[in-house]
Length: 139
Image (cartoon, rainbow, N blue to C red):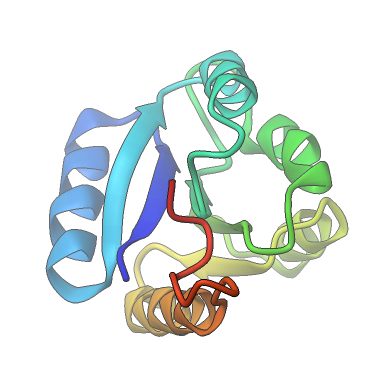
């Protein structure tokens, strides 16, 4: 199963690299992206049922990923939110987890761990089956 993924990243070159690389090695299908906190919050409200994973950068040109994390606190149990950042200091990681992030990954050092997380999430979604035998969350 491909995990419907929303990306919050303001730098086009990083966004393009993440999309291209992750689609090659992880079971992800990117369904949207935002470059600002306001844009991310708007997309998440408009497409609340259309994503299963959100990958959020913390420091954006407009706003921050912290506000996005706050908005994702009431998500469904099958929706995961991870932070992908260059600023993996313990206090920042703690704040992300307090705001409901499932995991925090360092852009430079934790890509393999992010891929493993994505694969595990895809497997967990595959395990959710409806009484009709169809995979859950498929519309």
